[in-house]
Amino acid sequence: MQIVRTINVLTLTALLLLTGCYGLTPPAEAEETTDDEVNNAPSVLVSETLNELALENGAEPNYGFLSGDLIGFEIQVYHAAVDVDGDVLTMGWDLDLDGQIDVATTQASGFTSLDLPLSILNELDAFGYGGYYHAALAFIAIDEHGLADTAITEVFMWDPEGGEDDDNTDGNLALYAFSGRDAQGQPSTGTDDNLIMLTMDQGGDINWASVSVKLSIDGAAPVTCDNPGVDGTAVCSLVEFGNTNDQVWSVGDGVTIVETGTDLCSYSCSIDVTITDTREGKVIDTTNGVPAE
Image (cartoon, rainbow, N blue to C red; front, side):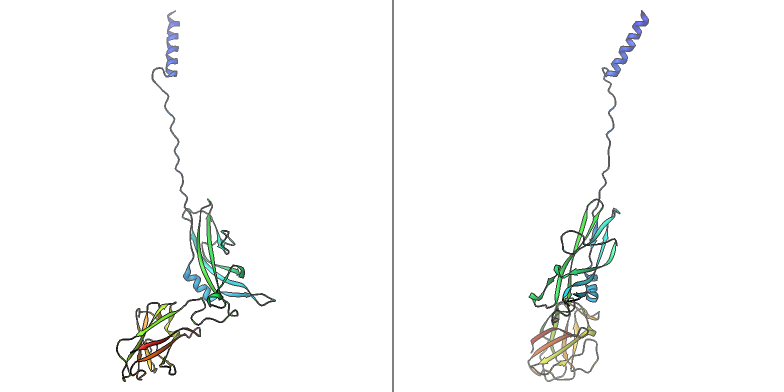
């Protein structure tokens, strides 16, 4: 009888322990923790400098075989793309800005040849630039998780058979603008007077070896001045101010036009200036009626 009672007590004790009646509870299960990975979008770049050089040296118009009419341009454009997560990228050029890649590439960086049809180009005749065309192109990169980055670049092209090249543009529509003003000192009967000052207000860098500056004083026949640093025989010379440590005429830089051995203006006079890019054979600016007084 004692044995049966002992067995019953042990059984009851075990049941109480299992059901928690003694205040004992089974240990809570540890919560699972996960570190969510952060995915970064890719980054893309289009180089305006490299694209401008490529357009200047390699934008080719395409003409219809039978009609001979312009049907588009073949150009090269530069891109670079990177994904810091190391994801595989789907990337390429969107030509018509509809958000879809039209010309794919697998290169992380480099040039891509594109054929631009006339239908996506903007003709600039209405602005006085006959034969010039404009387009905006987008480079798109999408990682394997669907994140994307886009960069847009503008391109300008010229059809040599589509119109006269404008006098104040180069092959890539780089517009030039210059301003003139009276120089220090008053003109006299001497032969070394400062006459006027010219400053480039707008345009691309142009090498002095490609610059020709001519003066017409009070309507007389034009005379050509020597460029900065040139010890020539011209009747006038250009003395550069601004950044004089390079070999180019840049925006913000200018020149003082000085007589060199010839009395060009004895009192007050009006001077017309013509600036020519001799490499391209084009007049890039005319500034008329600058007073020297």
